[in-house]
Image 1 (tube, rainbow, N blue to C red):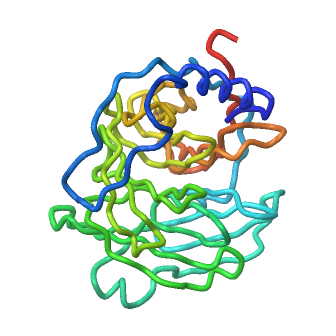
Image 2 (cartoon, rainbow, N blue to C red):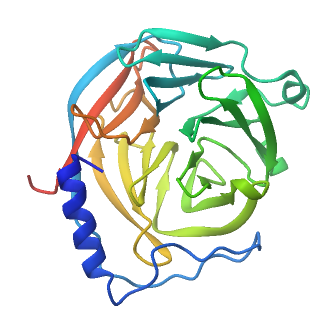
Image 3 (cartoon, rainbow, N blue to C red):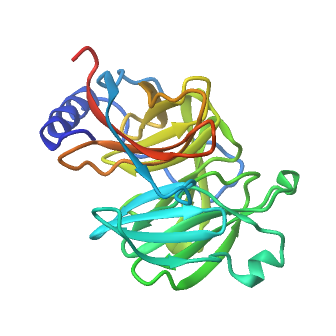
Amino acid sequence: MVSRGFITVVLAVVLVSCASGSSNRATTSTSTTTRAPVTTTTAAPALSARVVKEVVVDPVYRQGLARRDGGWAFSFNDGLFLTDDALHQTKKLVPAIPAEWKARGFDHIGDIDVADGVLYAPLEQPNYKLGHQAMLMYDATTLAYRAGVEVPQHEASFVTVDPSGIAYSMDHFGGAALLRYDVANGWRPLAPLEMSRSIARVQGADVYHGAVWLSTDDAHEGVYRVDLRRGRQGQVQSLGSIGHVDGEGEGIDATPTANADLRVLSIDAKAVPVRIVELRVTPAGH
């Protein structure tokens, strides 16, 4: 994460500190109930995030965002939008929820992700007690709907997919574990990744360079990093706040650019404007 030079330094420190520790990724399992064992590891390098810029965007871009080739993707409750790098809209799909899913009561798209040409969208129905939600897949260039699958979780604020095809989400609107799915094998549930602490009101997530970066609507609109490289427990770091604590934090993207390392959507307390809050991540104290 952060500027590419700093990423290299962080990864070097992590690799050295883990040289005699556990493997780099939690061992997968076909069980939907067995959780990955917890191990004790050296603390990850301390990081912090500071706001460097805010950009007001179309108020319909209020759920999720993701970097894609040549621009950005955004989500709304029942809409998907593509823009170029300058945030000029190039394509939209409204409504975006297919009729067959609406007929089953699904009505809300959360924080999205784009990986290998696929736009992944978490889809919710409002009866959380049923214990099932869905994940939809679209073409990231045309927004054509490809497929959808029901998944065993109570809520679905976000989904993010790593380069190996492992998807991460959360069972509830916050918690102390990340759900994991093997996308290539029909979204087969894997052992959840336990985190070192619970995080409340998680609205978005993005996986990048060995970590899942979380955005929240907690008491201080916090941003967090969950280290995936430190054994079988995800070490959590609180990075700071996006500000606008009277508003609502939404989705996050962790693709670094020359201008920022993290981007988080923030809805004003008055419902508008909607902002992209850009943050730079640096070693704590710098």
